[in-house]
Length: 408
Figure 1 (cartoon, rainbow, N blue to C red):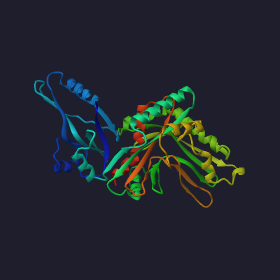
Figure 2: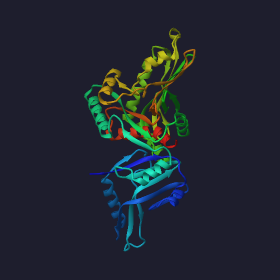
Figure 3: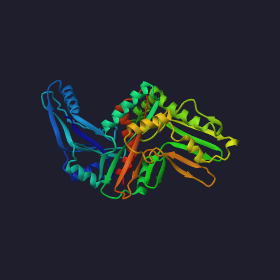
Figure 4: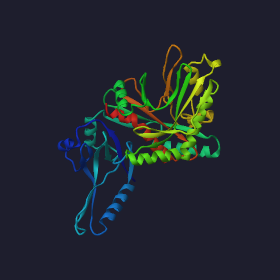
């Protein structure tokens, strides 16, 4: 049976070298403020001879197969880490060490990784000292159950029941102290300044998706559908952006979402502009295919306010699916949860009926006692979807709110 290894975000802390002087470390690799410090030893091994490098690789790969990796951070250096020190001479032993606990940091982002189903006491001390002590729980569905729902959705799509469905999932975090929504907004703004930040009755988040803006007679909607995770490596991410722009699966998903918005706006607009191709929107954790659909309200619809536009647009294919009614029924069948206000319109309206409404994504709902928060993420499922890839995408979409919580 595989042993679980978990990686979670960590709040602000002193320099890694300072932590290393205050706690008994077993390994380290630090340059400036970035790097790793490790505590304890899970396993160690030695290799000798001409094949010591390939033998080391084989041993590491074998050890990885025995770990159930739960990486909620992603990026270079997250997840399991092996420290190695090779001998100059092939006749002398080279030493390999897998630590019990690793604290990592890169470009201002910090995380902690531990091996075992329970957090070791030292890991608990590190987490509690640096930010909220958050205890994460599965929501309505476990990873495995949600992946099974994705597979069932793909089967229904291939059978011809529908073209696309958006499946959401939730996680719950319980805190050792009150979660301050204002501080959470400030934390989200630090890392996601290009998003629309919102707080309405304890629903707080940073959405990249504008459902609709109405200003005088000009209407705008930003459609996001088709997502790929960022790695933190600029060259790699540039290549990934190119692959996203050419991905038939993601372009198909995006086309459904854009089409649903354009068709919803058509009765109100005398002219609608839909770009021929999407652009790639870069966010710190993910990249999206994005299209800005614009239009001008026609004279016959001059009494239109933003509420009428929202009623026509919601739910779009970006958060529900295609056809809408069939997708909505499948969501009710497979998600096993109530979305509440997640994926619903959120924003403001003025006395003239103008305003902005985003879609409540990358968000969480804080409990009335402020001691827990329920966070959400959703993924668009089409015929070419893979359960493993969609699960990884959902984890990347959960990252903004999880990351912001660690900085409180």
